[in-house]
Length: 172
Image 1 (cartoon, helix red, strand yellow):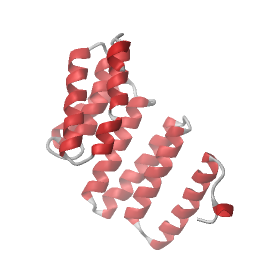
Image 2 (image 1 turned 180 degrees about the vertical axis):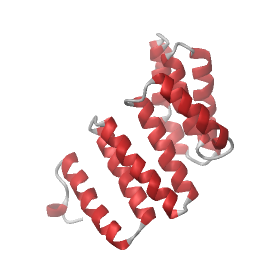
Image 3 (image 1 turned 90 degrees about the vertical axis):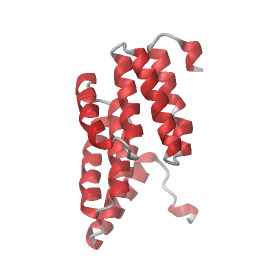
Image 4 (image 1 turned 90 degrees about the horizontal axis):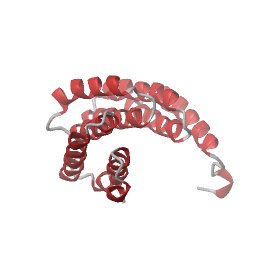
């Protein structure tokens, strides 16, 4: 990319994504739109706008379903689920959503995301043993599904569980 075309801020990146979304809509590219809305949601979450991010992930989920790409659907669902857990979703609502999703997610690439989100929610309720088990199993499944990068970054989630449990040494 030419340096003069490189976005200079997170907001510039978001605006560029929105411009690309217009082009993808014109092309009728549901899979491309799902990925663009997913990325826009991630940017909004990064900027601290978790409710706005949730709305964008809902759009991404709709387009992923319309695209017929099952793995894309699961990735968008998993990303939204985890970001909601880190963001604005209440613990009770999050645990209910995890319980509903886990029924259909078992044995799929979505299962580790559900377990990881549930680990956070359980830790916030003080259920540290089950939170640790969900986190351990989530990491193991991420590796089994070939998502080594996500499994490696999973240490942030495990650290959060340990910090919530009051064990900063275990969080290191």
